[in-house]
Amino acid sequence: MLYNKDMKMPEVFTRKNRILLNELTKTDFKLRYQGSVLGYLWALIRPMLLFGILYLVFAKFLRFGDEIPFYPVYLLTGTVLWSFFTECTNQGIQSLIIRSGLMRKIYFPKWIIVLSATTTALINLGINLLVVVIFALASGVSFSLSWLLVPILVLELYLLSIGLALFLGSINVKYRDIGSIWEVLLQALFYAVPIIYPLSLVVSYNEFAAKILMLNPIAQVIQDIRFSLITPETITGWGIIENIFLKFIPILITIIILAVGILVFKKKSKYFAEEI
Amino acid sequence: MANAKYSVVVKNLNKSFKLPTEKSWGLKQAIFCRLRGIKGYQKQEVLKSISFKVKKGEFLGIVGRNGSGKSTLLKTLSKIYVPDSGNIKINGTIVPFIELGVGFNPELTGRENVYLNGALLGFSNKEMDEMYDEIVDFAELAPFMHQKLKNYSSGMQVRLAFSIAIRARGDILILDEVLAVGDAAFQEKCNKYFEDLKGKQTIILVTHDMENVRRFCDRAILIENGKIVKDDKPSKVADAYFKLFNE
Image (tube, rainbow over all chains, first blue to last red; front, top):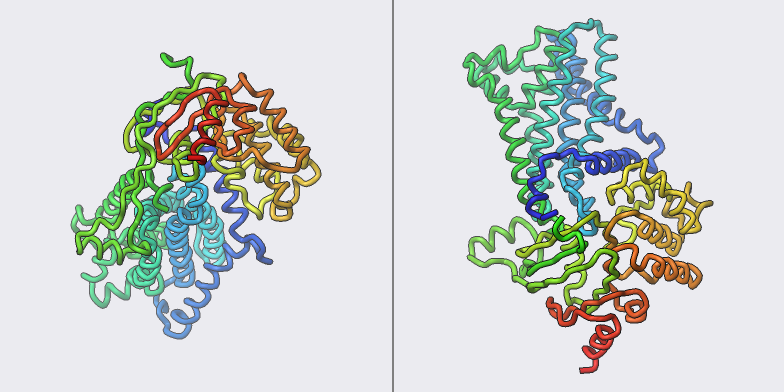
C-alpha cells in the first residue's frame, strides 16, 4: 500500500470509515448534554425558547405577521432551520479543534470528524421538525404530497452547511479567528434571511431587495420548506425571480460552496496533525 | 506482493516541520508576516533520508535521545504525518499506539471506551465483541467495566488501554514507550506476553529502556539527529546508545 495510491482511493465510505463515523456520532450524541438535568430535551428546548422569544417580540408586540396565515408555524419552521444551520456550521468548525488530540495520535480520515459533528445536528433537526409537523397540524395545516419535498430541501441545506464547515473548519485549524468571525457573520446573516419578518413585507416595500435576498440558498430552502410544508401561498424565489438562470443561483451557490469546501479540506487536512 | 517477506519497507524518508517564529498563531500574524515578507516559520528537518526494512514477525526496537526523531518516525509510519519525500510500503494492517488510550473519554464507561478505541483502530463492533472478554480479562477489570472511566484510578486506565493495545489483532503493532504500565504483577504479565509474541507478530517498539531492547527485540535501530546511525543486534545498539551519553 503506497501513500499516494491511498490518497486516490475512490471509496470514501469504506467499512472502516463507516464504523468510525458511527462510533464518533454515537459518542458526540451521548456526551453533548452530559451532566445536565434535562439532558437531551435541550435539543428541543433551545429552538423552542428562541421561537418563543421571537414570537413574543415580533408577532405579539410588533405585529409582524398579522396578515400572514399560520405565522407562528412560519416562524417556528424558520427558527428550527436556522438553529440547524448555525449548529451544523459551528459544531463542524469547532469539532476539529475538540478532536485535535485524536488527530495527533492516530490516523483516520479527518472529514469523519466534521461529518459526525454535523450528523448530530441533523438528528436534532429531525426531532425538531417532528415538533414543527405536530405544531402545523395543530394549527390547521393539512397533509399534502408536497411534504415529501422537505427531506430534499433539508438535504440541500445540510450539504451547504457541510461545505461551509469543511471550508471554514480547515482554515480555523491554523487561524482560530475564523470561528469567532463566523459567529459574528451568523448574527448578520440572521437578519438577511426572512426568518422573523415575512418575505411579503420585503416584497411590498422593495421587490428588488426581496429578489436579492432570495439568491441566498438558506433563504431559498427556508421559503421552499414553508411553501411545501405549510402553505403554497408562501412567496418563494422560484416565484419572484423571473430570469430562469437566476432562479437556480441558490442551488449553484450550494454546489460551489460544497465543492470548494471538499477541495480545500482535502488539501489542508493532510497537515492538520502538525498544524493544530 | 513483491515484498511479502517484509512488513515495512522505508526508503529515503524525509520529514521536516515548519515551526512558527512569531509568538502566537492567528490571522493578524499571518497578514503581518505576508506584508513584511517574513516567512513566519523556521524549517526544521526531523528525519533525514531514513531507510530500513522490517521483516515479517520481526521485533524491532527504535532507540535514541529525546528529540532525535523517533516519535516522528513512528507517526509518519502510522500515517499521522505526511512525509516530505521518500517512500513507505506497509504490507498488512498497522495498529499504532503512539499513546495509550487514544480517544478515551472520561465521561464514557470502560466498556464504551473499549469500543470507541476499537473503532479508531478500525475494528467493527462485531470484531470488538470477539476481543472484548480477552481485553477485560487481561486488564483484570471485569467488575469495573460499567463504570465511567473518570472513576478509574490512573493505573486502571492504563491497564485497560494497554490491554486493548496488545489484544488488538493487526499485522503490525507500533508501540511508543508504553511498556512500563501497572504494578509489578501486571508488568510481569505483560513481559511474558511480549515474549510469547516474539516471532509471531511484527512489532516496532520505541523505548529508552535498554533492558527491554535486549530482552525482546530481534534487531534495533539507533537514531541520532534524524539519521539512522546504527542498525544492528539489540545488544550492540544498546551499547552504542549508552556510548552517546558518555562521549
